[in-house]
Image 1 (cartoon, helix red, strand yellow):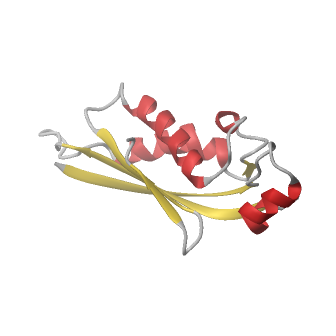
Image 2 (cartoon, rainbow, N blue to C red):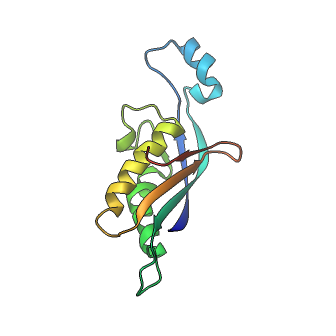
Image 3 (cartoon, rainbow, N blue to C red):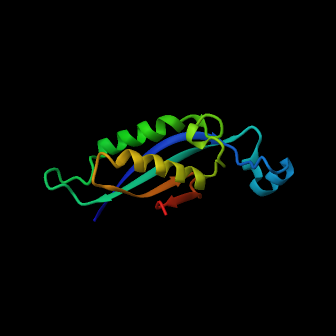
Length: 138
């Protein structure tokens, strides 16, 4: 089994906020991430795909094709956007990195399925140099 990685970059704003809670409770739980005027990050998304190399090309997946899928299905929808307001697949959901990465997984899994024998293995979403989340679709 070979694991292929593609890194993409995007910028986005969000706010962590539970509308069922008071403003004080949101600030207590989410701190500055509950800022009513939002806050932003320079995100890195690392997509890992696994599979056996094709005997004709030597590829698990053509990295150009993988990059095009990630850009079309995710990056173009989130780059320089407000995750809470502008991103259709995040509507009505908490804009935490944990929820965000799970939604990205659903999109990429559907997009990859018809074009390759390779399978999505892992997503890593880096929010800051100190904070990142991994998701394996489980």
